[in-house]
Length: 446
Image (cartoon, rainbow, N blue to C red; front, side):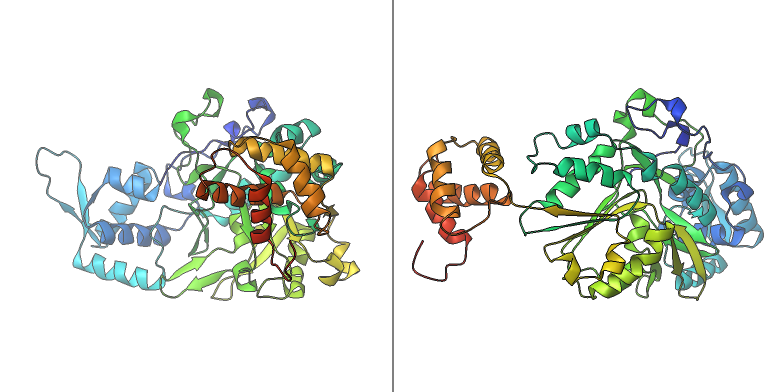
C-alpha cells in the first residue's frame, strides 16, 4: 500500500499556481494531543498491531500507525506502565528497541479485536475530515470549454452535448443523463473525470469518537506515486502521513446498488464498520448507472439522496445509534435508458439540476466513430463497407445509429475474419455475419 505525506498548500491542478491554493498545512502530529485522537483509541490500535506482528521496533510502529516517533513513544511509555508491553532484548548488533506484548497485553489486544477488527493506520478525527473535504471540494474547480475539449479529445459527441455537460459539471447539482441504450452515457460521463486534472488527499480512516470507519479503498482510490510527481506537486516532510495522495475518485454502480450500501454497516465477521459508497467517493464523481434496475426501488434511492443533494451534507448512524454529519461533496450523475418520468415524479426531478438527453448519432458522426474504430483495430477503412452497414443494415432494419455499434460490429467481424484467415480487412460478408450475430433474429430475413 503506497503511503505519502500530505501538505494541502501543494494540493492543486498542474495548471493552477500554488499561490491560489490554501496555505494551511496538515502537519504531522508530534504530540498525542495533536493527533486529535484519544489515548485509549491509539493504545488499542498499537496493541492490535503488536499482536499481529509479534515484535516491532519504533520504525515499524511508525510505518504501521502512520504516526511520528514522539507520539508512539508516549503511547509505549503508557503501555509499559500498564504492563501491556515489554522490551525484547536486541541481537545482532541492533540498537533500536524492540517491543512485544506481555500476557496481559495480549489479552488486552484480543479484547480490543473483539470490539473492532480495524488494524490499519491511525485515523483522522471527523472534524479534520470535514475540513479536508471542504478544502479540496470538487466544486472549487471550474470546468471550462477548453478543459472539456481537451478531456474529450478524440471522442465523437452529438451536436451540443459537450456544451450541456460542461456547465452541468459546474452547477454543484445532480445530473440525470438518459436515452437509448448504447448512446454512450456511461462511457462519456466516465471520460469526464480526468477533466478536473488535480489530485486530492484521502484519509486511511476517520474516527467518530472511539469508532473507526475505513475510507481508503485501494480498488476505488488510485494512489499517486510521488516519485514521479512534478516538482511543484512533491510533498514536504513533516506532513500528516495518515493521508494518501490520490486521483479524484470515480465510482460507478449499477443494478447491484441497494439502500444498505448508502448507509454505514457493520461487518460482524471482520468486526469493522463499512463506509457508505458516497462517503468513499467524496471530492469525486459518483455515477449511478442503469437507474431503475437496482434491487431497491427508484423511489427509495431518490428519497435517500434528497437531503444530501440539497444540503451538501449527509447524516449517518453507527451501530451504537450515534448520529454524525459528514460532507457530501461529489458530482452525482444518474444514468438510465428509462424515461425519467417513469422513475420519479416532476417534483423530485426538479431537484436534479440538469436532465441531458443522449440521442443516436447522425450519419456523419457515426462515420467518424467507424473510422476511429478501424484505426484502433488496425483494419483497413473501406467506405463502401460503411455505406453498406448504414444503407443496407441500419436503415432497412430501423436500427438507430448508436456510438457503441461500430466497436461491437467490427469486433465480431474481426473474429469472423480471423476464422476465415482474412487478415486486416473487413468485408460486407463479415459485417453481415456480425450483424446477424449481434442482434436477436426473430425471422428468417437478414
